[in-house]
Amino acid sequence: MRVLAAMSGGVDSAVAAALAVEAGHDVVGVHMALSRNRDQFRTGSRGCCSIEDAGDARRAADVLGIPYYVWDLSERFEHTVVADFLSEYEAGRTPNPCVRCNEHIKFEALLDKATALGFDAVATGHYAQVVTRTLPDGTAARELHRSPNAEKDQSYVLAVMGPERLERAMFPLGGFASKDEVRAEAARRGLSVSAKPDSYDICFVADGDTRGFLRDRLGSRPGAVVDTDGTVVGEHDGAYAYTVGQRRGLGLGRPAPDGRPRYVVDVRADTNTVVVGPAELLTVDRIAGERAVWFAGALPADGGAGAGASAGAGADGEWFDAQVQVRAHGAAIGARVRTTRGADGGAGLEVALTERPLRGVAAGQSVVVYRGTRVLGQATVSRAWRAAPVAATA
Image (cartoon, rainbow, N blue to C red; front, side, top):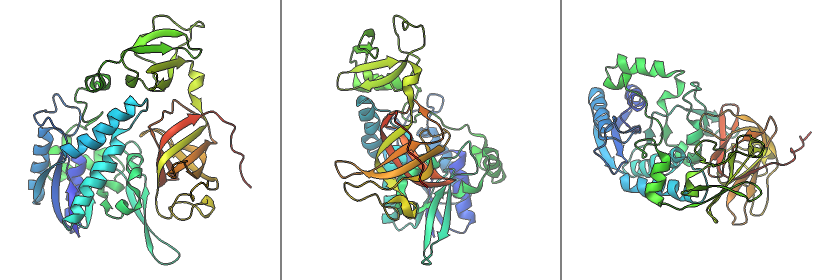
């Protein structure tokens, strides 16, 4: 196959490209230039978009003996990932930019361009597995599964890609159980990035100061911090800088009457108000999601929506047992899930937690549905609340 290897300049993508070459594919390496500030170096950048990274990717491609190109996707990145990040915070929600990057850049812009150029697949250094299963009618179905490396598993941020893009994706690191194994593989192949530190935090927030980045882009918007009864207990410089569950950095001038810690329990963008309250108000057992993506054949027969589809307009699917995860490295917990349709006809889902409640679930986060290691689907959290548990079916 003709394979386009996405090379970030890190050890994971370099080894993924090497394994694609070793498997006999015709491989071309490409580095996605996502930052508009191409002069930044890792000493001042905690992400994966620096000019240093482009050089590291080129050197890895030279060692592998494959063609290498740099594609400037910075404008697309700014207009999708960064714009979504800003608009979501401005709306009082908490986005995950890595999910949006996988959706709009790696498995939309990059994959679509690769397909247009005649490539059969895109290989990345993500930690996830693709499992091919034979269906009763004899056709093959590709499933997205967790990586055996639990600490690095990235199936959560990949769930947004959906079944069609999964058909053209390769994750050569899927079988590696640890990062040490990947580094050893890189060293064995003479790749200089074998000891390179991992990138972390948000790649386009170079200094890690998310609040400062939001303030620079959205400006000062002073408003009130109020208790749950509406009493003003403090001030803020922009409600967009707060997220549900936050405790630090509230700047409250006085403690709660009972002396207990206070947390952000709501961000009301329409009134530019931050609401604080006790920890118990953060506990939820029901989650609703919008913009749902289901993998083909993922829903069980009693899912009420057929194979990989959502329920019909105005209808809700039947509840089925699964596990859900609401943070990239959070635990998956038992739940009942059903497909839904919103008033606008969009695909959604509803989750009733059965194992235990969750704390601090914010609108804008991703909720990913699993069955064991297999990813069934994903949605963006639109609401989380307390409700009576859904009764188990016979």
